[in-house]
Image (cartoon, rainbow, N blue to C red):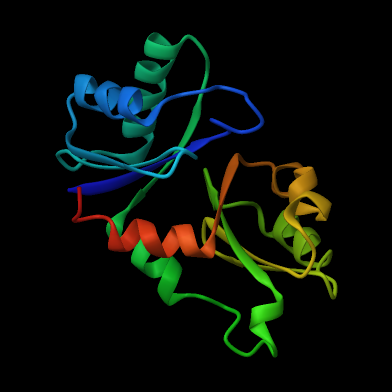
Length: 180
């Protein structure tokens, strides 16, 4: 089965630096097959037998800490789940979509409905939130750093771990699943 591991907070602002060749080798040493990485932000596509995402996450986090000496939070998605993320894109009716940037925050769990309502209520002209299961879609008219999202509002409001990727990366991960 093909999985995507989304590592949170590596190679950002000089923190938790991991070279992609070392990351690939670590995943291979853990026992995964056909390991590929996409860009430096910690996106790993790999194959293994079908396993519960929670068990898989723990196995990877333990292997990363052993190899690199620090905690790295991992969110797991299957290829089917990533296909659903793209299929469920909620911003088709937005006017002038080229003036916005789209991101997806991959959540470690499905958040509480009241927390979701509170986050959605923070949507405004510059930042729009939509949620589908354990994925949060974000439409930004301002830069990421200047946004509520960039100030970590997602984890604060939803009380779950999140790792965020831009829409281009999300799509590229899906098309990269069969490439080296």
